Length: 150
Image (cartoon, rainbow, N blue to C red; front, side, top):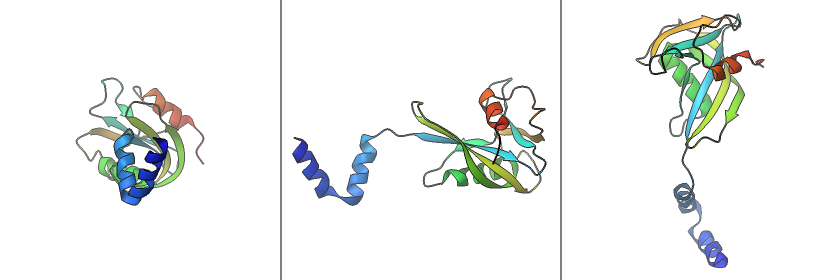
């Protein structure tokens, strides 16, 4: 049976192999977070409308679109949610093991723009010193903020 399967695999080649693999394997959403810092070391936090009451402050976060690099996801999410332009730097965090989600976080630098809550999802957007974060910041985001960048 294994020899037949191997022979069929070699026959279908290329795009058809990818389709079979796609059907066979699990599908995941990729949540991408940006640890956006300005030139003074402050971090950008957003008050998210859809997050649980009392835990609404957090880093810019969103899901990667099909065909989009994770770095591009950060740039897009920050622009959509705050109107700011950022430059993505190093990978800060990668975690799998959830049923249908993978988490990725990158350090990012503020480039230009004025902070504003620019989407329905965001109630407020502000810069904070890492030592003076507001109440209600998710613990996982506090850990990301406290890591040494670069």
